[in-house]
Length: 600
Ligand code: PMP
Image (cartoon, rainbow, N blue to C red; front, top):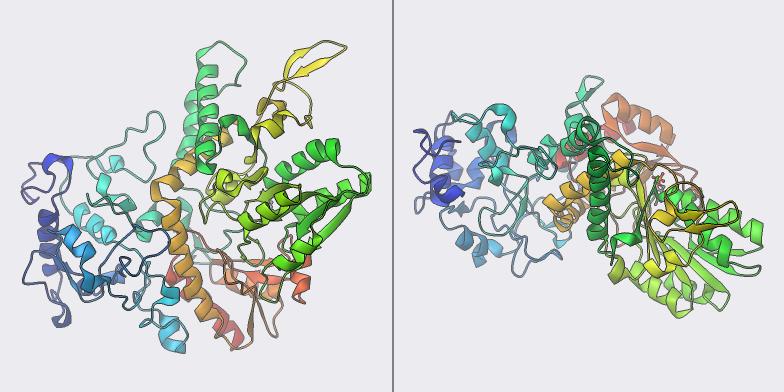
């Protein structure tokens, strides 16, 4: 954008950063120019050039509502993501810091009428449900910004940057991205020069092309994120870029493309290392996904170290991927599989776990987040308890990594696994993290190229990790794509994502639980991303099909976790599951559809 464009107030881009007062003035002019101007109830703040977000709430299309304070005295775990703008309060953009820290604005107030562009929750209003807009849900107010509206506003302004160059989220971060920069402040996470990020879900949604799909004539609502997440454009573009500019096998040639592909692949490994806070990239083994990672540990370390009579502990919450490989090994080697029970909310019972641990326990393997119920397990504590008993620990992070910070050093797990496709990356790529010494002391599970340092007909010498466990040509492009997905998550910030999703989860829980005949399966105090339920009088597949007719994708079935569903007396459930791009409006559509089905 040209800094001399006559339509742009004086200092908007002075020094390459937007000038707050100019932005405020611009926004005010825009709002004032709307048909009907500001509603009487929501005038401009006469004391400043700022805008009143109450007025914003009346914008055509209901694109934005009030913003909830997140700040001193009302601080979410994430800490510094303070956005202190409350419905009806004037916001002086010329003093962003003052506005952000105004103690009046920081007073815990109403939750937003809606975050995420949904407008007043029709479900909450219609059904007088627990999603009370006048009470903060779970004490967890939402950071929100008005960037979408500014984006709209700026779109109307003549610009010297061709449309195609408007940066999209994650546009940077790979070679040749040509990231145009003067709109940098319109990224989903925008600090406005304050260093304080806030989250704009409308902007985030623009990064995911598939969200524009229509299903049965209606906009797609993707609530099947626990099965797989959708991919941002930056990941899709990164894959194309790899095949257009870098494609080669890795590690084994002197030519230019081999170097590019190797750099890209090893660069992705470093990104995963940082994402997991692992000590070294050598601890990151690329595999197909969580399932393969668990099988790898069972068939290498388990095969090598476990003996008849040894015990493996898993939890009742496990996905089949964390049951079957251990069962197979147990049958082969005469091991005992023991299971930590859960309570009626779906929480592991630590006292019972303590009783299971003993001198025969050689391995504990459990999930950080249950895919069927959403329960977050007390993973750190469970790892500690296992180590005290002298056991090794594998943590299944498949359902955790897209919702919360993974820190394998803090967790102190011996192995940690996850799948790329559950964290906005491609399918067919996943990660086994293992402590370096442990990996190097473990026999490989597959033999072949890449994993050796020397081969004769009599003997083979193996490489150290990670090559030791990466026999043959791996999924190079998708590893690079996973790196781009991690870049994407990092750009937004996993803490902010977790905070936003928690809000959505509570919003959805409050609405769903009030539907007559609906039983939530899994009501743990600590939950992430998943709402499992059954509806009296309806088969779960019928609920799924009915929702699909309305463009809403949820999973219905046993979710590859039959034992835990049976623990709750059901064979299957309907499972909407959340990601950072879901909105309250989508939750409203889900709730409406379920209610309509129920009342038919
Ligand atoms: N563990 C958990 C908790 C899961 O949710 C899943 C996938 N649903 C898996 C393991 C297996 O992941 P993948 O199919 O990607 O190997």
